[in-house]
Image 1: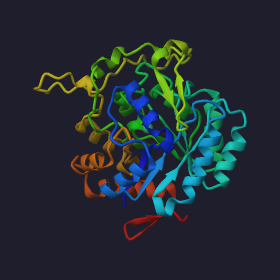
Image 2: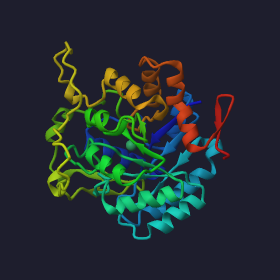
Image 3: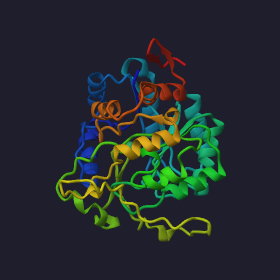
Image 4: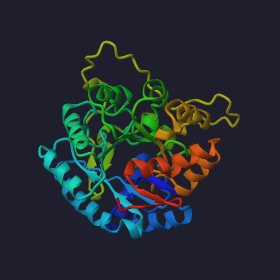
Length: 349
Ligand SMILES: [Zn+2]
């Protein structure tokens, strides 16, 4: 039984524009076209039983169509294998009502994206949402680390994650991108072993760059970067997204160097490994073992990552059969409360 815990789809009429805009912003190729139909085709080919869809509300008000669609998708989960989380924005003052409504309608979790939502993860607005989601026994999945389209944004880097974790103890917290995209050394140091789940999305496969990708570290000014939500609406990032916007009140907080991936000095091909922006296999295994395979979830970040390709990677990564089973679906089934029958899962409970 295989569960992809981190995927995205867009309404059919918006998918082409949405995926095109995001691919252009990040200067990467997509694996799928962003429609539910293409994701289901990929699931059938890769042997994925369930995919968790993670919509993001990039401004208050957008949660309404997003959550309406989530409920519609979840009505058909047993046939389609698609399970949608809900969306919420930190500026939603009626967060209690929104979360309660999602929980009452059987939505198992929410997605928060501090970079797209331009709010630090340890901001009170997120703390109260996470706390309320915990009361509703919901899973909270958070974009963790930097974002490829906003390479200097610190909204959800490891110091802000640990500050949130020091305040709250969310029992069902999933940190995407192995705890911190392009922030992996710090994730290994400060998050491994803590009471959180890590998903593998957008972390294991080398990125498929479009031309000019190598200039990512000095990419376009903030006002040219875009955010895009599952309604397909494009929002320009107005903030400077720098750590300087955040008052660092914690004198104990170590100075964090800007980590640009994990270098592999053994490369013979002359290519700069830092432009590949993924976790080297050795570092992945080290992080899995330090954190515990029982808290790692397979996620492809489809359409930005390939499901079959990520599964192949995991199968060849040197994990034990038990670790592999847990990561590919066993851990996710438990977290989602899916009942497993002879290796497959049902969405009935
Ligand atoms: Zn994602």
